[in-house]
Length: 619
Image 1 (spheres, rainbow, N blue to C red):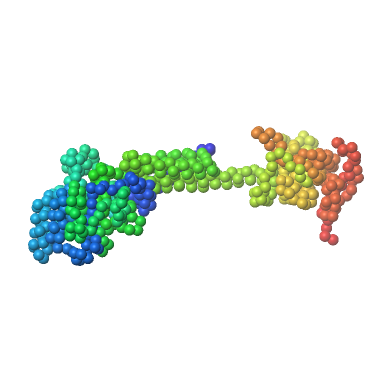
Image 2: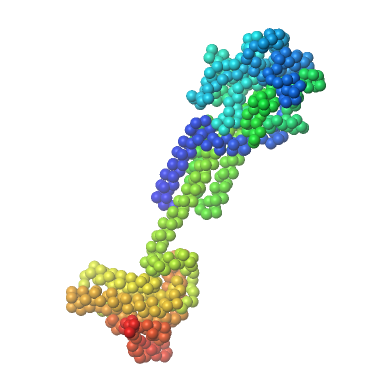
């Protein structure tokens, strides 16, 4: 490959790299987050057997059935107290009530009932809600306006409070757990799911915040949170999924448990989450598991509890490493796509796409790391598109170059027709009916003796230019220059039925155009030179003749060619001699004089020849 092509490819690769890096690093999830996130969800999705819900996590639903049985929301706080007391009697591991209770009840006895339960059972968790502004000022922190806490009438201790906030990504899907949120006084409020999971974890395995290191730990393992204390978790259920052998958390209607239809012993050693489970209560969100149906908040918390229990957290590759991957992908693509073309290039393109997606899946499964997915694929696509455009432009340039070179041997109209029709000059020879012209300068030796070599070359070029232009004007093919002579073919490689006529017209054009040159030479030297022209037509072998590997010459061979050369050698200065074959085809078009028969070398019988004087007038 030429240095120029490599230079262009490097510039293109650099431009694509800068574009990919810019879009990858702009904002949360990059410029194309609306493609990146769904694509990542699809490739990172787990099979059903990989996301079996934990049977020790159960959901008590505040559903339509319960609303019908107990009444419209909000409920009497003593209702929650009664249910929690039942669960505690059944030796539940922990209870999380995902219902905000910010205002005191009109009846203090209701709050007192719940306060007594909270004081009696330390494994009961109530929610705290951080109110965030509509737009965050920075990507590396979460700012809040105020905090909604349970009413003081319940007297819930700090150790039994946890935040229930979820923060959606740019595409409004919840993928991350906010492990903890710092208050303005510096104290950290753990997530609802974290607080509940810690009741089931041993002391050495609990989730904790290390103030000195400013890190979150799950046991001895660092939780890979981002600047907002968020970590990507796994979903083990689809929205509102019913329990079966492999999917869905055990869920029960609030009213069924409250009235004893469901025995409280069912919840022994379980983590129980109580929360809204109907659309009317407006606690539902889109998740990676959602297509159209949203997931209730209590389901999201249940999934996050399981992620904590199983210590399965995912992290995103740090931006510098992602940029390195982009650079590597683009360099590899630039090399492969510039080196290979056509089907090979297509297979390499598809192979690179599939290979990187496999790398993504392996990193996701083995390392619990999300590599950038859309941006490297976009870089591969852009590099492939560039290679197609680049190769196309290069082929166009090469085609123009070859056309220009070939155009020195055949007229542009012939070249265009060959390209348009798709006809190819066959390797080897093809028998064709053609006409040939041999032209030679009479008196060239004498001229060479009287002029300087540079003047001879200049004169010769002028004469040959006249010949070439005349040949091309009538769609002839310049076969070769033979010293001070010219050989031309008419009717090949593009076939013309009137090739004999075109050959004669080309010869008359040469005679006409050389008149000025002859006059100038006579004035300068006192003598002049003229053409001798021989024209013949008939069958000949036309094609590429020579060495297939080293050099090919497009020419014609055969008896028709030999006779043409003999006619030219017998032509006197200024004469255009044609054969009987030509005469039969063009006698009605031109003024032609019979010159009788001559004996030519290679022929046993004499050959009748004719001289062409001019084109016949209309009169």
